[in-house]
Image 1: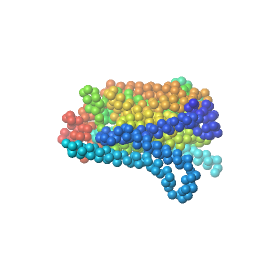
Image 2 (image 1 turned 90 degrees about the vertical axis):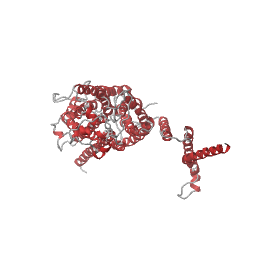
Image 3 (image 1 turned 135 degrees about the vertical axis):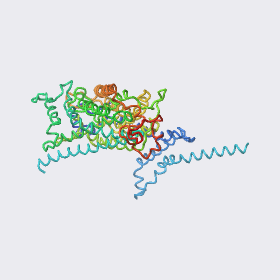
Image 4 (image 1 turned 180 degrees about the horizontal axis):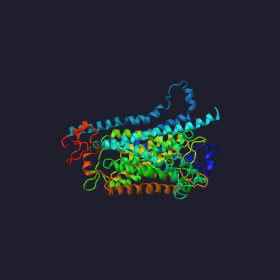
Amino acid sequence: MAISPFSTLDEFNNAAEGPTEGAIYTFAQSPAIIGIAIIVSALVFCWFIYTTFTINRNNTDEAGGPVHYSVVILAGLLSLAGGLYASQSQPQREARSQPTTAPQPKQTPLALFGLTGLSALPTYRQFRRAQRRSRLRRKWRIR
Amino acid sequence: MSPDEQAFLATFVSESYYYWASVFMIIIHVGFLAYEGGASRAKNVLATMVKNLLTLAIVGLTFYFFGWWVYNAFPLFPLQGGIVGPWTDPSAEGVVGEVLGLVQASYPWSPAMGPNVADNLTGVFWFAFALFAMTTASILSGAVIERIRVGAYAVLAVILGSFTWVVAAAWGWSPYGWFLTQFGYHDFGCSAVVHGVSGFFALGVLINLGPRVGKFDEQGKPRAILPHNLPLTMVGLMLIFVGFYAFLAGCVIFVPGQTVETTIYGTPMTLASVGVNTTLALAAGIIGAYIGSKADPFFTISGGLAGIISVGAGLDLYHPAIVILIAFIGAYTMPFVGNFIEKMGIDDAVGAFAVHGYCGLLGAMAVGVMAAGYPQGDGIPLTGFVGQLVGTFVCTVLLGFIPGYGSSFVLKKLNLLRVPPAEEAEGLDLGDFGIEAYPEYSILSDRNGASPLPTVPSTTDPVTQ
């Protein structure tokens, strides 16, 4: 695994005619390394999104546990990945079934799942609050 | 188009490129002005901002008097030759002869420095380097706010901005410098050459300068001295970001006769990569510092700069995905370094050491790991860990920390380094200028950082006059 794609200055100066076709960046001949770096970068970004929910110093939200947020983010990623996979695997059929330039509805439910999950966050909190209230009411009735 | 017209056009493109890049670099100083002014308490705003303004004058003039000559005269010294100057044999040939030509154009009395239709480029390169020098000195100014004497700061700014940084640039940011020719050092965006030098210089000064009154309690625990205007600080850093795009663009070499853009080391690169990688470093740096500092606004906004500095040295070589990771790591760890420095009893008001010193060191060393093995010329070692280590050590310790500590130690012994405690308690604005930055806020004087101790009568106080 070579970090530099060049061993001589001549190769470096004439990179456009070389095997890298002009690419002079690190790991230009090791696309797997670049792929891993991109995946790690995306995970770092997800960590950041997760952190924005949990780092609030005055956060009193009982619903937002690490597991809950991780599931929401994971669901979003999976749904986007699913949408992407479906769009790449069935391009011909889509073109036939949707000859106009209208938006493609086929992958929308899958892709929207993640967004729905994200938007459901406050709804879930409200649901938990309602549950708590209901439990308290029941408690009072028993007493 | 005739050959003469083509040649003129090529010259004009280079001249214009560096001219406008340098103009945009002034935005860095607008940013530093706002950043440091916002970071100070209300009683020290004017002193902080005027000190920053004076940096332009102090370094601008001294860089003309001798700084530009130092850059051109020192690259060969001490490993490849002596310091080149009027004493050098005018008939010298080879590398010494080439350097001598540049040195002769850099004297303050050189015809190349004045309006000269036979040389459009020497002056515009001086302009760009002068802005680099001012940036270096400005990094110090933020660390020492609210207690340093203006005169002491002026002396330190001259030493840092027009000498030690320039020596680092001559050795590590020049095609003739021995960092490159002997060790294969690579520092495209001046991570160690600018930021490492200035951050470690600031650390040396801060040890002698001491913390602001009230920064640490009786047990030595740090207290937060909050910026009087955090929004202004944030706007300031946004302006610094803009200026840094120009700073890094100014690091690209394009002169008539070249067929590709190159680094100062003569290796090929593209301006586009500066745009992509700087943007990603900025973005990754902000989120890194956000997480690392647990959403501290001051560290978060500094994270953008920390990210850029962490990748600056290899910005021309890194793939964007590598940039994101290095910038994130640099900015994520930066707040820990800042807090560690504070726990050591050092009051770095704007985190200059953590952002510039630490990330500059990290950025330069990252090339030795993540961009090792690049050729930079015949007979020149490949980029590598040892070459980066040597250059980074010389920049941070020999040209940064030791001169900063030594010069501030002398000033301290002469009782010239720090303002008297009474003036510090009263506020430097009143002490230095006799006026306040926010006269309408006098009603809030007990809440704007003023000391609860009895204040010293001001010379402009009508009652005492």
